[in-house]
Length: 310
Image (cartoon, rainbow, N blue to C red; front, side, top):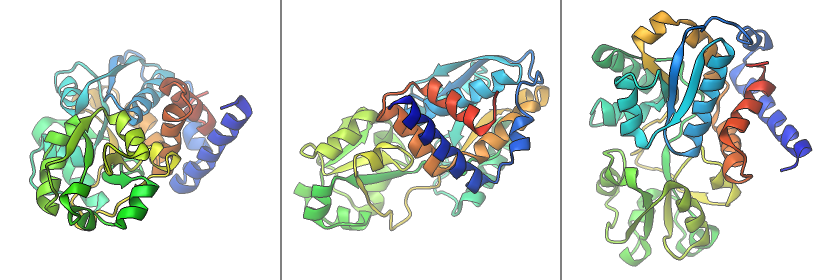
């Protein structure tokens, strides 16, 4: 993407984010170039997929701009990201409400509604693990299944119930390794919908999008709603008509003791999270996955254009 097109593209993200979040320029400028977080050192964590890399870089850059001295650390999967926080190997990272509620807190069913799910997770994680959830973002990075245009036309399905009712030969799935074992992933999904489990290929997360778009290996690929490749590859997303997948609202999580020592972490990150929407993340993710940009560069430019950093 050339510089002029890229600047215009980031500009569109800024307008959209301001419209949704109502974030005033004065509020973001208050976080620019302050020294409130001097003395805060260590690592900010993030899982190994694109959105998490961008969010991790966003948090690291913004906190450093306020005086911290942090580095970003990519971690392999949810279990390792959570363990790194619990063991004080990182100072915090962006996590998703559905993941924490079902995987870490081991509840059997999600809470209905984004706000109610966030409130339940925040209260339980604070009481049980002394983990604080900062303000939730305006995005829901939930799982879904998608198919290419040919499969959509040929199979004529629009919902996950219709997908699971297809003949077994048509129920070919591509999923990622973590999804294959999570309670909010394939085991629970297959049981809830009665999906055929005989033709399931486990692939790297990034490979699923292109393989699904190409067709052949699988008719249905497990994808994330906020991934920019869904729109870029013209994938058709199926409706979760049984509402199996919980809300996966993102928020920065950290030890309560860390926030008590450095309360400005919330001052810096809360308005940033409020500006992060599904559309913003889809487009930021696309800059990395489609245009080949570096996550750190994408994070830096978005923060600058939004006025969160100088």
